[in-house]
Image: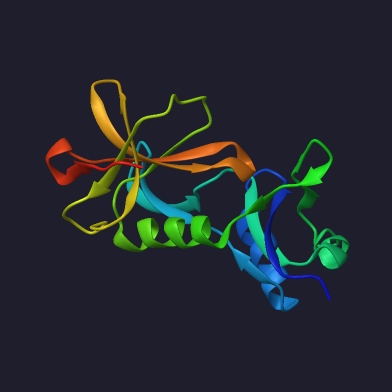
Length: 167
């Protein structure tokens, strides 16, 4: 039996939660990063939960069972790069979970962001996390690259909480 890996499943628009629930019911391990945002309507404000990465669900399975996951209504396909199924490392999943657990404001960005300085976070809820710091629009962001889906997670962190480290 091949080793379990995190694969990236592309879903139909706004059906990430339904797909994740159905896969869970089949006994398949799923990770759907959710963020809460305040939506303003003309008559009220409401907190809504939405997928951090639109149209993506992470599925922990092995290559032989990928087809099984695609049988779920709302599942479209597994993401491929040059004919290979995209996978996400366990450490990247753990990093996303840790950031979401702290409740810090996080943005996603699919653009090509130049390499930044290697830093360690010195204080706050993400203390001791190591990664990269980039400057975008006059703000410093701690960036987590998720190459499996060509996305970056950006957390705005004040420079005073960052220590530049060597590689």
